[in-house]
Amino acid sequence: NNSITQHNTTQRFFLHTMTDDPPANNNNNNNKLHNAHSAVYFLSVVIQVKYIKHNSTVSMASGVTTRMISFQARRQPKLFFSSSVVGRRSNTPTRFFQSTSFRCLDNNNKNDNVIIAGCSLQDSQAIHKQALHPQTPISLQTLMKTGRGEFLHRTWKDETMQAQVKKNKKLATRQVLIQVAGFLRRELPIRLAHRIQDLDRVPMMKEQSSVTAVKELYTKSCLELLALPEKITNKEQEQEFATAVENIYERHAGVLVQMARGAFELRQAIREGTVKHPKISNITSRHIDFEKMEDTHDFLDRFYICRIGIRVLIGQYLALRQPPVDNYIGIICSQTSPYEVVKRAVDDAAFMCTRKYGDAPEVIMTGRLDMTFPYVPTHLHYILLELLKNSMRATVDWHGIDADYPPIKVIIADGDDNEDVVIKVSDEGGGIPRSNMKKIWSYLFTTADPTIQEGMVAFNENVDHAIDSPLAGLGYGLPISRSYCRYFGGDLSVMSMEGHGTDAFVYLTRLGNRREPVPI
Image (cartoon, rainbow, N blue to C red; front, side):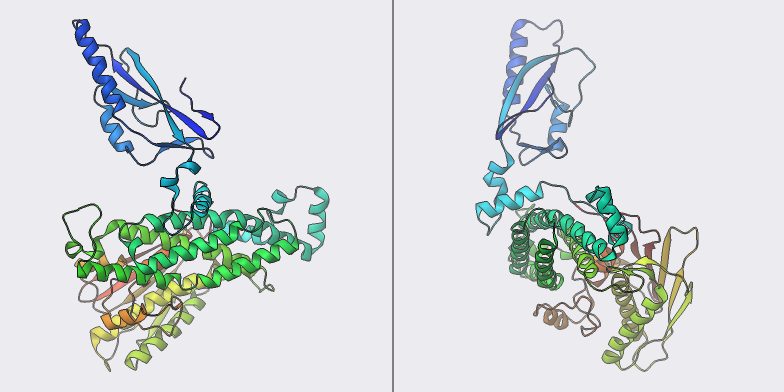
């Protein structure tokens, strides 16, 4: 009947084998042989499925992949699922040969699939339960409207309460904080649980001590949040929640460098040949190029962009609890001036370059210097600081110390009909070899002195926004900058002319209506 039936903690998933009618000239013996082959073929397939209640879909777990079943479905007998996830019914006359029911344990009882290394079964089940829920993507506009209290009517539908909120600003602020805290109490454990499972499963990197430490940190934070009341309805509960997330925010400050250390440890292990590639058993890590390990870099991209999302949600909530600042809604400035942000980034980059080389190239700014738009200034500052310090270092290295440096040019482009604010950073620092263009987005790829890189990962410090770090170091600056751009729907691209210079383009959405790219 093409349905999924549930019985208490067990779920039944019906898988049918369909066979085309045998040719008319086949005798009974051939038919029996055909049917016997179908039965053996069908019973040899072992499939584990999970029924995700929140979206009523069926997905594959370990065992037979969708691609494998799709391939098998093209052969006789045909395999297809009742929910039409894979395979397709043939238009030719068909008949049921056999219908079998597989008894699958509920997800919470599949201890082998649930257990997380280093966690008790109870904690693993709690985290797994959170990871079954989808993450809720947000946009810049949503954060601003929520901070202004424009969505209070969705939580408090009582007309009397709505009238009181409109008259009393203090009450409105309190209700906004309770509403935001309630959302974060539900959302943060889900996001942390997804990352914990990702950290627990990533090949090769999960074996590094720094990555294990990050997983333990995320696990601790997730369990602390789950221990708090599920619903936040009053000022006291909101205060308790705020204290907890503030501690988590501070505790996670060094995660970016800690994960960079984990990647550094993996690259060292690759060079020493102490790890094996998980997909190719006869190839040791000595033959693996770290910069070409796509699975590992995809994991790091997912992790870092999710880290940005978690810190934006907590940072916005904590900022809303502070006294109001003109033109700010939490961490978002409704009148962000790219020109002002570029000026601060230029000062910081020049300071770092002068400390290293004794001088720094001039920076010339042109374009729409008067324009403003809603954005998170700290994100933009990080991106521009990274690009400017790269340009200054390249310019000084290419032309030599005490040379007459050509200026670095920053152009801010915007128009009323433009969908993006575009910032171009252009230098004449010799460019990047074409063979290295893909590597610039690779974590830990850097042209800096290896001793500097090794020294930076030796300490657990939050240096991602600091000006006291070296001008060039870990090598994660560009990929992290691109993640900051992409978080609110923008992007970062780099074009280079070897022997001349490099142009970097920062794309930022003007309207702020793009939702964050939350990975699964």
